[in-house]
Length: 210
Ligand SMILES: [Zn+2]
Ligand SMILES: [Zn+2]
Image (cartoon, rainbow, N blue to C red; front, top):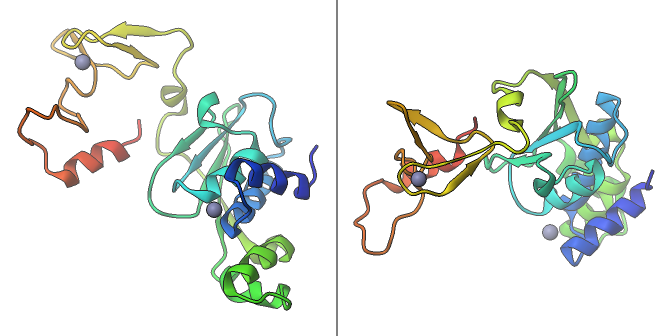
């Protein structure tokens, strides 16, 4: 198992520097794995992580948990929150981890040598005891994990645009197989087309989870 420092280093390499949110991410990933009793970073696909923002924290969470978008073990739901839910896909157990309310305030106490607030976060988040830094809560998922994961090798073609659809993301309307964009959930339009969807509605579509 890599050490905390090794995980920070691995995250920093991906990110080209180390920043406070990566530190949070690494610690969140380590905590999530431990609370579920799973060795992290995982080398299989048992752990699934839903992260509630994009950005720096993702890199820390990914290296610590071993969950990656490219491996289909990480999902981003962009609620603009530094928070993540770690799901054991074998048991269905899930735990949501967030920085505690005092994380920012207390960081300075653990980094007296820091010369800026940013540096206080960077150092303080590494030293702060986990029970002060993070809060965790057992949760149940409000979507189907099976549906999200789907089946390997499954694919159909949209009967309108002809494009291939994998992971059972098609919709069937009156017996016709459609991709979600052709079914009306399109987040883009061709430059010739007039705008039909208000931006807010298009955003909702992007946010939707299965
Ligand atoms: Zn960063
Ligand atoms: Zn289509």
